[in-house]
Image: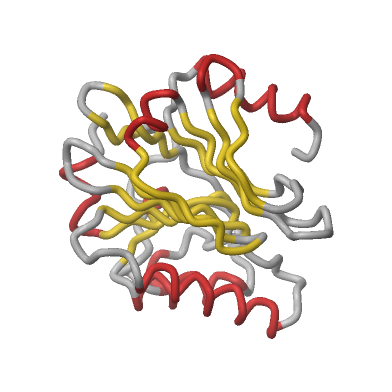
Length: 218
């Protein structure tokens, strides 16, 4: 995603499917900023200061950009954005977690930073932790039923425990495992779709359980 052509490719898909907010991982852009794109879209990005590694971003439609209240580039793996919506304030944390093969210190540092960001989110906000969390949770929902639904897919990896523990500690559920894989759910600002969640093995959305049903509609 470090090349402009890849950004344009993602933007084309976003426009085609009318998606207002998209969390992007591995941008590999240096520093942080707001990059204006085609048709009024904008990319808020956060990367390493001098190495083209990791990097995260939040791609916004013109409607989402107007609804944005704040954004904070945390580091090359986490960016925080907050939006106004008809259902209340919406906080989206876009992430790119350390891989399953990374050392334990790097993994722990990522989740400690992520926890500090989530802890600062106003308690009444709708929360979505979104992105490449490099965790395969598998299909065995008995591992932690408070967090994992009945619609998981594939195998699991060691990062699953870190993800599930983080979700459990923050009253979050894995949104993709609460619905059938083929289903699509939309969060709306007014009458416009704000966020589309599609079940995936590693791209994961974490949401508060009490917010899952009233907010997302088929």
